[in-house]
Amino acid sequence: MPARDKAKYAVGFGKPPRRTRFKKGRSGNPKGRPRGSRTSLTLLQQALSEQVVVTENGQRKQITKGEAMLKQLVNKAASGDPRAMQMLLGEIRSLEDHLESSRAEVLPGETKTQMLMLERLTIPERLELRRLVAKAQGDAEQPEADLDVDSSPAAEEDQAHEPVSEESI
Image (tube, rainbow, N blue to C red; front, side, top):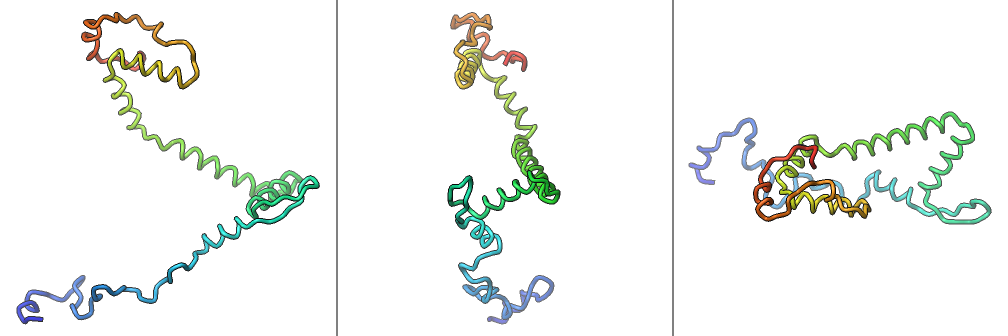
């Protein structure tokens, strides 16, 4: 290394000496986790997805170990085991919370943005949107009957840029 490069580089906090830095192309953790090694989560998923043969209502069938565990938990809770009931109710609550949180992912600001976009639609675009929504919901009636709209091209031009309240959408 030239002497002038050494003079410019000050060793200190966050600046280790150049000779002790990681070399290019070398890992900082050469004996790290080997490729293909499994985590405890993957081992658990693998174990729960293994097939077992069970006899249910006199018939033998194959189900996963996870399914067998859940069936046993439900059966014990139904027979009156308080610990099984507590575990099952806890699982049900956590599933309900998860479903509610996934439903609540629509942000409040996103609703305002959607309302602004709807306000910018022209009358013919709104009629088409209503028709498509009615079709998706299975309604056979056309929602155009409840609107008093002059269908002349001049009237459409006049109404094309009027702001509309939320009630008319």
